[in-house]
Length: 244
Image (spheres, helix red, strand yellow):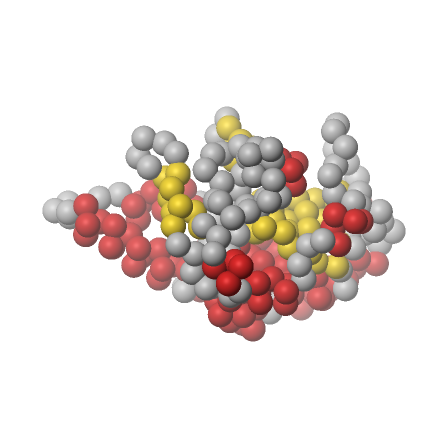
């Protein structure tokens, strides 16, 4: 196994959640490109970046762990070599990041764990599935390469990534993109598909409305909660059973 690029020095360079929220609305961040979607024939395109700091603050203010989630993370942290640090790779244009990063902040607080957040990209949005650190030295693509999302026979530089470590930076668990119960590709595929009689412009506008409504619905909270539950369960298994 290749040596991890994550150590105490690198981890310390990440942002706390409060720093990340402030950064999201900063001129520095707003000058960066954002992901705009995929072309029908492959590839991706960039879009202007929006100020998502208010969304992150609002979701954090509403985010609450259940009693059993709080008890579970406290139990896990108290175990020998239990979780002590969370490294997150995020891009605030991502709905998955806006959903999960605030509740990960709540989890870190409940367990007394250190949380550090890193951008995936630099000034330019990643325009390919597999990042190239040499092509974007201002990005964190070396981190991303360590935590690629392997699915459908391919690798994707998906965000968010949340990696849980023991105090000595031994990796315990990684959570990538969204929980298993959120069948995002199926849901988004349905929203994006043309309806009978729709023009292309009407299809795009309806898809945008439906996806925005989904992000504001209780189901985004359901999936945020599910991601925490999956993580707690995986960490418990690691503590009591060990590596497979």
